[in-house]
Image 1 (tube, helix red, strand yellow):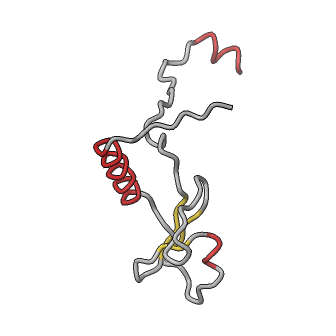
Image 2 (cartoon, rainbow, N blue to C red):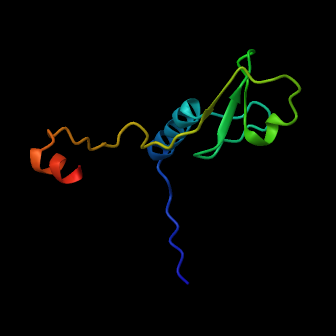
Length: 96
């Protein structure tokens, strides 16, 4: 088995670290366990501003202020087809 080992130039390494740091700033994390909740998982928000995942919520004594579901990166960028065509007279008579 051949393994290709290559040196990572300093600029490439710096750009990788910068992008990962920027990504971690925008991701939601659980305040207690520090993990990123999965897509479709519910996150609970408390009045203090703390976000807790499903797993850590059971350890909290107070009730959450709000909750929301974690969406994937494609959320809000998809298209929904809406049929705005007027109904035809034949289709209405056939349905009746």
